[in-house]
Length: 257
Image (cartoon, rainbow, N blue to C red; front, side, top):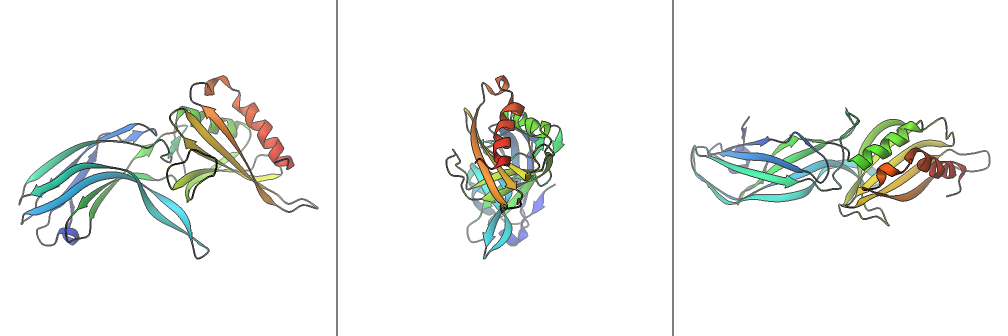
């Protein structure tokens, strides 16, 4: 449905509609769609039209955790669009989802907390940019699916996902935020209260960061433990990841890291 942009363009009632022809995609895949603009009662000049991905990212403000929308992967789809009264202008587009795009679906289910959308932005001189936002599903890459399945095989229970502002040292990260997949603890690793798994995807593989919240012992305090490993897209199916992760998690649980 067309959305009115009265606040953005003033009198005239210009409208915008974005139609996604790709309801879901994996990181690195292309999203196709069309932006439809309909002129109102007066002519309007748009400086530009772009589409971008947005997600909610958590960051600290004065020691408080605050969530806000963060845009990434922007692509221009129109320049200097002259919109006449009543005129309909269609701008087809194809935009690639960055490999680090947060995933919202895994194993045929929506990940609680997962939220990604495609946002259309209209740049208008002398006015606040107008936007139209449409949700889109982001499915796990094959390598991400294999790793998440292995974690669940080890008894960890999927809880939720969220995105954190910041950069993980020693990884290939390029976006200003990263996604954490949170799991409740497993009975096989009683010292770990929960486990967080972060994927930083690249064209050849994944950097995987495991972070465990270790319970306090009789003479030790609780603390966070982390470990990083690399996964190759081409050889991921040749590794017993349940066994591989068990080795790392057993050491984390015992405090060797």
